[in-house]
Structures are given as C-alpha cells and as structure tokens.
Amino acid sequence: MSSTPSDSPSQRVPAASEHLHVAVLGAGRVGTAVARSLLDAGYRVSLSASGDPAQLALMAEIVTPGAEPKWTRDAVADADLVILAVPLHRLQHVDPALLEGRIVVDAMNYWPPVDGEIPAFAAGTRGSSVVVQEMFPGAVVVKSFNHTGYSSLEPDRRPAGHPERLGLAVAGDHPEAVALVSAVVEKIGYDPVPVASLSATAFLQPGGDAFGARLTGAQLEALSGVPAPVA
Image (tube, rainbow, N blue to C red):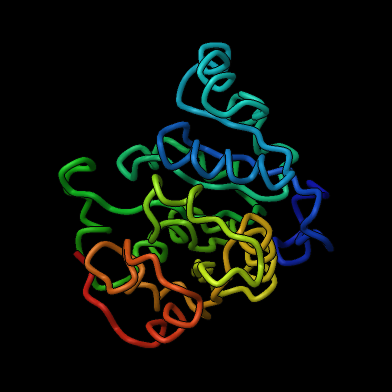
C-alpha cells in the first residue's frame, strides 16, 4: 500500500482483502478481541497502546499471540487498515497526521461514566463516528465492531452459510472503504451489513436497537433504516 501523501484513501484501498496488515490501536478488551479475530482469520496484526511496546509485548504474547507490539506511528506506517479501539477520552492523544490517508475503523462507543463529559459526543445529535471523522479529516472513517460486545465477538463467529451466523454492520460515506471492511468482516465470520452513511448509525450505538442485540444480517439490515436514540 503506497504511502504517498497525495494518494486519497479511496485510491489506496487494496485490491484484495486476504493479505492485509491491520493495525489495532488500543490493547484493551475490545482491541484484543478484534486482534485475535483478525489473527485467526489469517491477517497480519500490529498492536499498539499508549505506552512502550516493550511493556506491551509480554501481555500481547499471552493475550494476542501473533500480534506485533509497536509504537502507534510504526503500527500504522505500512498498515492497510487501522482499527481504533481506544477509550474515547483518550482519542485526542492520537495524532491526526498519523492517520492521514488511512482507512480507519471506528470500533468505539461513548460511555460518559468512563469517558466523562465530551461535548462533541454528548450532544447526541449525530452519530459518534461523524465526530471521529471530523477529528481525523485526512482519514476515511468506517464504523464497525462497536455494536457487538467484546465478549461475544469471538464466540459468535461462524462460517458462511451457518444457520447461526450473525450480522455485523459496516457503515461509511465511502463505498470502496466500506467494501474493504466488509470483506474483512466476512472473513472473520460475520455477514457484513453495509450502511451507506456515518450519520445513519445511531441504531448501532448505546441506546440503539442494534446495540448488543446479536442479530442476523437480515435483522440488522431491517433496522438500518430505522432512527434510534443516542444515549
């Protein structure tokens, strides 16, 4: 994947999703669950947290064996896809320049008891991923992984065609980026359900009908056009 600054994110979508390098930013419960799912699906995964990767290495060896602990700048340097899985109150510490030209998956949720009052997210008039996109204007943000519980993500994975296979929403304003993330979702064991706009994702957030509901693709698609409250 080229790192030429003039490349737009849509121009930099890899032609195939089978051999991606995915950088997961955040080594908490969400980030490590996503990382393990990606590793099991055969992807190369880099993992970063707020501190020295040398300190992360031991934990990663036990919790996410196969992931490469790195500084954030090194993790995203040659990544095809970046997963944001940090607490929202720490998102301000991620340098927007690092994500310039990247396809970035927002796997986060706003939790006031944990994050405190963050006016841009607390307003509740827009999907939280719209705010994330504004914080990282040089990236293409896609929303996914946020509406399923971290403890359910791995055990709920099923092969294509399985009667118990569930859906996972993939929302974004750029069809090429949504298609790439959808291919990743498919490979890790879910039916991807594209949603055509970041602003139409309130139903995926805390307080929305899809949040934590463990729905099939058809059920999730049926909710995708129904407005839902934002907690």
